[in-house]
Image (cartoon, rainbow, N blue to C red; front, side, top):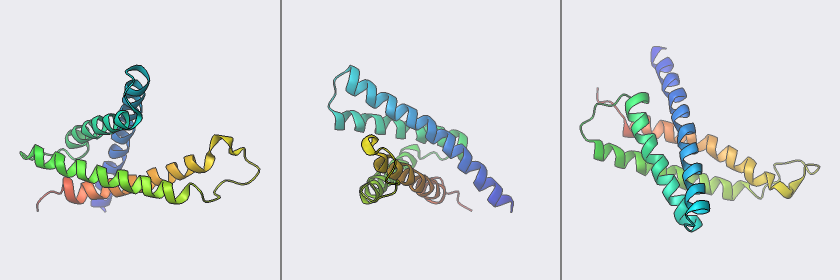
Length: 142
């Protein structure tokens, strides 16, 4: 049972780091797009990349307390897992956004189906990212 408790603690830390990453991602994307006039997709890529980089270092130090000397390889693994997560997130949103998740009496001008799909996708991808990073990126050799 101690391993399950340790895993749960890591998951909570991973969630806190992920929240900080979301703030960095959205903030930098908005800054690049709105203030600097960077095209949307490039601004999004910049926000994602810097958030993933921040998340890597915070997770390395705080969540997994990695002491690996192969920082570049570990970062590449983390970024690869993040890219797969981004693809999964996009796929889930694409598949769910047109499904009638929201009751017909709710105002649909706010595109609720998209946002509910995004919340579902984010939850699924968070679990994917955590497990992949725990058992692949930061796997400790026995």
